[in-house]
Length: 157
Length: 112
Image 1 (tube, rainbow over the protein chains, first blue to last red):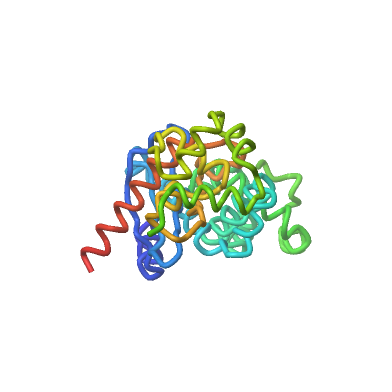
Image 2 (image 1 turned 60 degrees about the horizontal axis):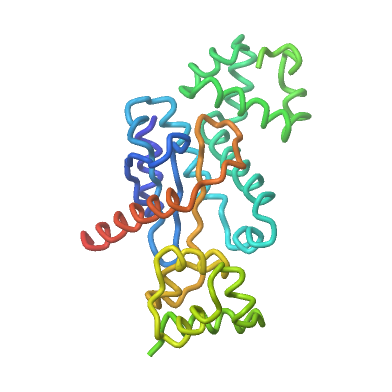
């Protein structure tokens, strides 16, 4: 499944590299300077942690697909707010890519409620699965309530 | 030919700051700034970074290595799909990451 992320990156002309980040809190970075190919850097220490790697990789790809010049213009007026909005956009992209909503609904309706079950099903980390469910409930609540056999409150996420 | 001194002068004048005002912001003596703008004095690395921060441009722009003022933007994930937005990344760390990314770009271009 990670191969899919690589090929998506490749088709977008993105350079992907593993790198020993000079900071322990950073696991990935997306870097784009106009007229140059974009770069995604992933921390070397997660190279073999498949699920975490998938999540970080997808999030950085999310930046690629959700970033725009408008957003850059915004970034100058209120950096913090945009950083929030920006980060959230990228994560939501990653969530939609790695755990598509219809598949999630299917999984929940078939009896997978626990975060770790869903994480395993979608091959992502538990935190990512938890974040994904929260984001979906935030953005697509009505749709989900209509289709889910179990109410969100009963989900252990 | 453009020089770093000229760039600093222009950036300062665009903001309608006097030399004294800018010197104060950069925490240097205004005679030092005056000599820098006149290209009579080299700019120390630390001061260069400070100018870049004050004017919100890249060090490369001040050094005339590029005409683009835009800072390349870099967005970071702290991982695991959790929301940690406000972690400020120290300048030095940022520069290191950018350098590595630029190195990859250069290598990529050479290979094509």
